[in-house]
Image (cartoon, rainbow, N blue to C red; front, side, top):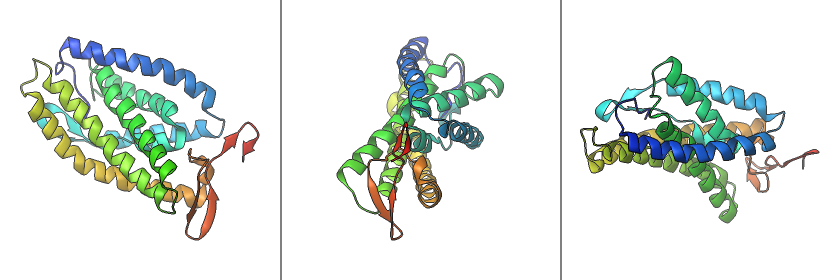
Length: 233
């Protein structure tokens, strides 16, 4: 999914940089306001964990790669704004020190994995939990958000490549290839996401963001998150 330098037209790079800059401004401000002392160590841990996970790539069409994103987990635990910041840090280190992704394409990679790959799972997660309040809703929401978020991120990457005149494949081919590969990755991401959510439900339900919903899992009533200035409500 990391697009290297030289694969996108400068016009595509400029448009994706502009979109990412808008989300950077919003996310850095909102994350500073919303992150608690408890979540900062969690953010560092998840950033390191998914930095390592993203380094395990396998090649797909035209030099791009497929891998787990980690966006759904950071979105559910940290919220979309801190999740965007976390993904930006991961992608910046990978581009500067490991050559995984480019500098001219950094805006596109952040847009795909930091915006689409984080905000999409969070929106789906919130929508499912709002309309379906059952014991299995949280796990279904986590899996669905992870799958759709990965797939849409891949579709955007394929579209950016296909719209670039320097890329050898047209948009339909690039989008199809990226979508097919990342459909399988999306299933894996969904399984990982639901596994982490299940662990957090049993050990640290306060770390989950959807605190206003009470769910029942394994015969126990758990109140998720609910962080206020005074602690957990």
